[in-house]
Length: 551
Image 1 (spheres, rainbow, N blue to C red):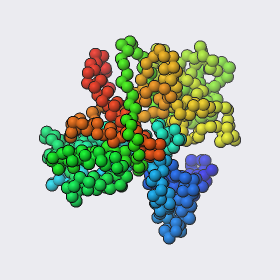
Image 2: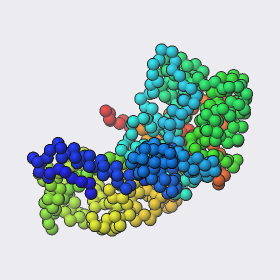
Image 3: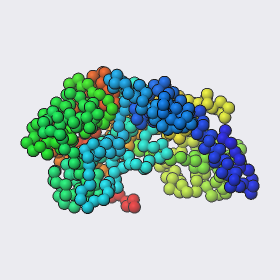
Image 4: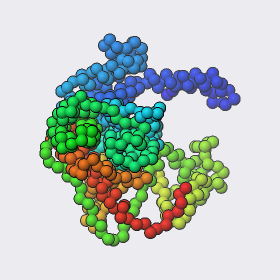
């Protein structure tokens, strides 16, 4: 337990005691035995590989604790010079052999890809512009922006296990949480636009405005543009230079050849360079730190569902990611067997909802609960009305425990981290406390059950980002759509067959090819398919229902 200096009597509390207690808490957290490996794992995941070996984590954690790594560091606990030296100079980070390991490496973060691309292609401000300002929806489009986390858990979870080959091997890939159709669309459109028009709003670019018509090669709308010029006009040299700058030399020989042929087909050298840049940032080698060995086969893309023409039902799962004090949402009210409200009030003390008459009472007499009625929080008047109308149900006594535990045995008696917010979010989406089917979510299993009856056509949709609740074994992958619509990917391509070229660069891979590159290529091509399908469907859709103003 952390040390406590504060008196339990408020009148005796002092600023001195509060200062001592805060400092003691900081020291307690800094010197906690788990802090060094916690920091080591996250630094390695960000800089080297999503799945470091225990020995690698141990070396970096030791450098953090001792403050020394070889000749680096001051010898003081928590020295980051020693820690980062261990991260970047260990054989696990430098060995060329590991570049060929299909399980080594990671998917690159979208913000870092954007910054690295702009720096490598020498972005510079146009005259009279003093700063590079990106459009307000930049973060929503790609999933990241500096100093703008969605929550205390950052942009992704370090323990996230994706689908595809990494998931089959139980490998973590935190950045894969940001690889879905809306964010792939936002990133690709933004980078393509930067190449063709500079940093502007043209074709969903990263800039704020585009006051003039958008024309490829015309940078009059831009606040900045790419100034990179290759050292030679030779196609081989240009593609090799771009491969070095944008993929650290990882670009496969097959993809180099595809890009070289596309470059050579253009008569305008400036347009040819723009095309080559677009194609390289469409390769899995740009988006991951893996090498790629393609097997020459096309990837399997799901077939478009056939409309059934019959009515449908929609089940909507609203995931509220913040913390919720459930004990103050649904509260015992009238209980004939014993006074449960008094028990609740005594247990909760000053944070109990009182008086009892302020609760919004609901009837539970037809249930097997101990109380004939419960009380809802006074602020939940809309939910109270839904319950009374028969449109809302409470699941009481629900949780992730698979057997009763107490404070003395919960660490061994629970299969989940009961006091970790991120694990509780995951468990709410899975609802599988016995861990009988760990790769699935509650809605995914429901979908599987419906599909198995061979009577129903089931489609799954996520709004804004993926949800583990929809993970299942059967049926198509969930569609992920942006909350503000579905912009078309590459609305005005530089050449007519560009989509076919991009598909050829993301073909199926050999078994010894990098699994993170394979995962990205699979998600990328599925996103291209889903984007085309949904933009076409929505462009022909007509809404007859009048919806209220949500402002």
